Image (cartoon, rainbow, N blue to C red; front, side, top):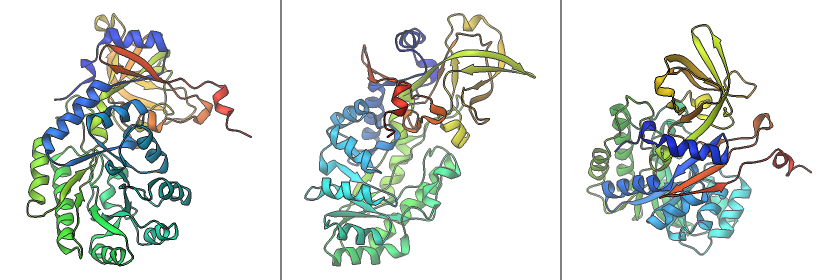
Length: 405
């Protein structure tokens, strides 16, 4: 079931903007739980680890921990957030990419003697773990040579930065086992935003690579982690992912293997559970296009500038339906030409003071926000049933210099 931007209550969003100012992120915890439940139903006995990088807010993590999810953490900071939010050690996987020494120091100190699994993406990570006297559970990340996703920047399966070439993995497993590490699984990730038939065809190729590695493993493995990357429709005319078909495809790939299936959904769980509210402060014409200058920008929502990503925009002015449509580009206050949130959209004629909602902002929205241009980051309001509460305060100008010495 798809949640479009039009499904959000205009009245409630206007109330939240009035109460908390703009820009402001809104995340619906009920929708987070609903999305997780849909995944759990589709994949049955699979162990679902929420990819914390999609949205690491404490309330989001706590809701998912209570719902029975595990956590996949790509950094020491995400690991700390997950443990603080109540995830059990045995339900946490630490999956760093080229981890800095400081990250490994923290992780080994926090995880030694626990049931947390550490994923290694290069041979020398074993040396680095051994140097820190860690000999616990490890998983080997496979570089399958096949990637897919909404852009080249997120097709991780085709990027040699991630993982060990599939043909080398059995030897790495054997070496790790000989050195006293408990090798419990293998892992690969096709990419982020899998949605089209072509994406899923490439994903199936990655599953086949993983199945072959399991068969070639010199030790018995507990699980195979097929990553996540399940896409959501950002455009109004895009069809949703056929989750049941993906689940059937995944089960079929590992049908003859005696291993637990692990998955790492992130975007699918939180994307359509969040919106960004921003207010128009400037309007002007640029040829045939109207420019709506708003108080959110690329420092608030980076994805359009970073990936040329599309996010639906809705004018929440009470009389918006009575206004003529105008071709409109939504631009922010950052001193960069890339500071454009939406280009050439047919929107009700924008006026100063109008409230805009930007959809599918629950994934990689507040997580990628920055203070570039010395702009404070926005607050986050969580909806939980009829309750609306501030879960992250707006940064102040004074906050920008609190870490300087």
